[in-house]
Length: 313
Image 1 (cartoon, rainbow, N blue to C red):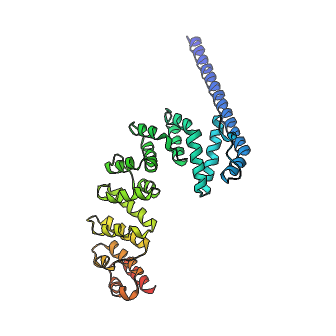
Image 2: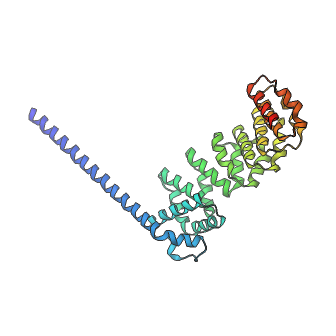
């Protein structure tokens, strides 16, 4: 009986040893494939980066030599494109990258978007946004009907903001996704002025987090054309909307109608009084001194400090 047990244990040990060796060989093989792939990508970049540079700088015409024939060449092109997009602000280069991608990379990314692997689908969604692949609109609409992860849905929403503003605005209004303020700001920072105006026109229909983010991103634009919209929000019942609108108006830095801001000097909310003190910095002292003197006696130390700074300027 003991001999049988020992034999069984030996076979179990042998089995696991063979399994470990096989697994180790598999990992080694995969590692070698990955190293080989990376070397091919690096070699492509080394050989072709100067040709891409001359094409982007219009020093030589486009050459069929740049059309990728293998996957590692596409991956090398991705790295080259991303480097230019990240480090060089050039509409001409962006257009050339977009034109090339829509003509020669569309099929590749379409296959990735249909992949069963989440990582490949996400990588494709990032790249089609970076490279402006507008020719895959039907695929984006089809994906929008699927059950997607939050990350996929968010990136798809970003793509719609670029190529399908109607769909983008509709999805924002219907609030089919629960987005954070941070996510809304990522979406709203780069949208076209016409799309931003459409969101402003239906402001009351937007989710609160989107309303707050829209106001914040408008302030960052520092565009005088947005002042009437922001001033209109000062009458909202939501104190957070009023405070953020005051902050956005302060960032723009221009007071068109002082009377719109005077009521906030006596607000029950200290953040509104603080923003009033900041806004009064943009008014000649002759017109703001009496209000700033009142704020110097405010119960909030921050408000008093801000009022004193406004008077000193």
